[in-house]
Amino acid sequence: MAAETVKEPAADSAEMTRCLDAGEKYLDALETAFLNAERRAGGSQHFYSIAGHLLHLRLAGDALAPLITPPLEHLRVSPSGAEPDLTICAWDPETTGVQAPDCPWNTGGDGDQAKISVRNWDGVEFALFKGSGELNLLDRRRKLGFHCVNRAAAIFSGPLLIQIHWWLSGFGLHCIHAGAVGFTDGGALLVGRGGSGKSTSTLCCLDSNLGFVADDHCLLAAGAKPYVHSLYSSGKLTPAQLDKLSYVKPLADSPRSTAADKTVIYLAQSERHKLIAGFPIRMVLVPRIFGGTATRAVPIAPVEALKALAPSTLFQLIGASQKDFRAMADLVRTVPCYRLELGTDLPAIPRAIEQLLLE
Amino acid sequence: MAIDERLRYAINSPPVVHESFGDEAVIVNLNTGAYYSLDKSGLAIWNLILVGASLGEIVDRMTVRYTAAREEILASAAELISSLLHEELVQLTTDAARSGNIATDATSNGGEKIAFEPPLLNKFTDVEDLLILDPIHDVDAAGWPQKR
Image (cartoon, rainbow over all chains, first blue to last red; front, side, top):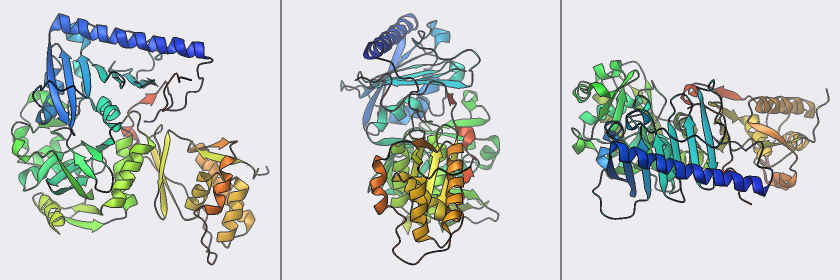
């Protein structure tokens, strides 16, 4: 989702100054609210190295930790005293008893439950989901973010995606909707919307020679030598997909890992040996479910791969831009693209991918 | 109603992002969850819009490249632009400063004229359910409020 041109800009510099002051006070109020939550409910601190950038996650209370941290577990690092590139302060109002402060601007009426309030100013990005009350804010100047969300609304297969997208886009890293499997010296991106066979293809590679970087979202460093970095070590599957993947099914034994109609699996503990931090992207694969048992790859035009990758990526991000789209376009222009025609013999899928990578 | 050939259009960015490949452009409307493709004469018109051509200039350039009569190309181009406006992919602009780029636009083929096929805007809505939510307060990439 993009940010549009403001329709009624502030009339004069005094008005702008007033708005900026209100923004600054709001940031201070958020910080105070988080510190109150931390004081009342205790807290924990977590450090992650995401594509070489140090994230410091401060959690108030203990409700969010089991929801936010498992998909990031494989990126956890020990505190080293190094200055974090970003600190995100997160809390839930329900267990800490601390609500997020009111915004100094109109965020719409109660009838706008399906809306999102988006603002940005002077290096600050803000998004408030009206329905769930989930608040996301990134202040680039202070290298500080805030995330306030009720437990029931926490997106625990891909937590903090919005902040990470805002944050790392400044380093030329683009959050993309793609699976990624391969070897440390090169691998494949698997792209496509839900139901295309992307997750089935990606997760059945766990039972193969291929390493795992991502099922759903990962970080693209575009350029002459495109590279993908791991972001989440989680996967999402429907019950039908899970039934087909006998190797993966035992990994989904936790009742808390069911989100909507999909089961979330966490790989950092049991499948750590399969996880790799990233690899140079050698090809883009667009899975399609076909009849027959065999899986085969058919070369396709770059633009076809872009259509499979870009819309589903861009529509899931707040503040997606031409720069993100260009990065994906550059990727499909740089590496070969194939349609992966999936057969019913699931072990044949990773074999087909491995064969492509070895050619 | 007479078509005003002096009108110029600009891409409705930032919500509209686009990329051109050799024979096809992909256009995404980040506000609606729809994406589009243009090829052949549609791609040529799109590329001329990108360089700031007016409708009349678009048609003039197209008549150099295609075999169809000017009236036919004008009607087709106007219809495509009407669709682009309806889908909020372009907007009217008064900015004529970019029109000097037209001489170097992508429709220059330098060879024989080719057959004209009316442009078709292909629309895809298969992933619009992924659009997070509707924005209710939109701002531009420079931020709000903007410092002067």
